[in-house]
Image (cartoon, rainbow, N blue to C red; front, side, top):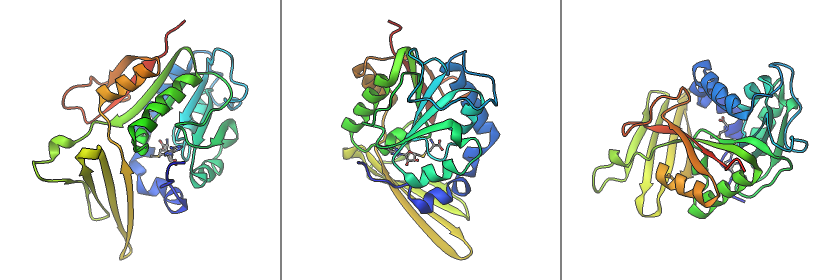
Length: 265
Ligand SMILES: C[S@@+](CC[C@H](N)C(=O)[O-])C[C@H]1O[C@@H](n2cnc3c(N)ncnc32)[C@H](O)[C@@H]1O
């Protein structure tokens, strides 16, 4: 099982630490994008559809599987749109936060490693957001994750990833560190091991004269490498955008939303 860096300390303060992720301007376009791919026969909004997973329809239409569901930042609003959502996560602390939220009873959850954990049912949509693919720190695990996603999709099903474009252009020769957050409340810097294709994100939050420290290791991955992983899993690139609003992806884009599709038959 990969290391669980989302322990109780992080889970209980996830929304406080990354409040920008919960802004409607961030959540709503993502939910629009994902619900569109989940299928037109998702039930009426607000009805609290039954959780997906065990019992998802044979075609998977209207059912979505989130890898690294966390506290339900996207799973809960997606479920309110009538999409039957099932999530996999290895952090019981993150799942406990999800469980405490209104509407959580409509989201199915399985505890496990999303690179290998199987749940029953077939899904129209599988998704992995907020750079979470990089939590798998070897290429083998990332490849397995794509295979696992594909195995859950029905014909024509989509797999969506939201992830940053590696920022190696910020590193002058000989330098291994660059800052990504410099505010009075939060200092963050990325420390690269380019030979291993790994980066450690170091965070320092200050509040009330105290400093809280958190570090996590990530395997950064290029769009083209992700396309190859998709191909190994029997999928092909369908769309790539700079963001959930389908902004064009260019050489200046700092992150991307990519959709790979399983053949329709
Ligand atoms: C950055 S958070 C994102 C949570 C949620 N998707 C969101 O958008 O707010 C990453 C989540 O993925 C989970 N996670 C990381 N690696 C995992 C793995 N190998 N298997 C299952 N869950 C994993 C963490 O426990 C955490 O809840």
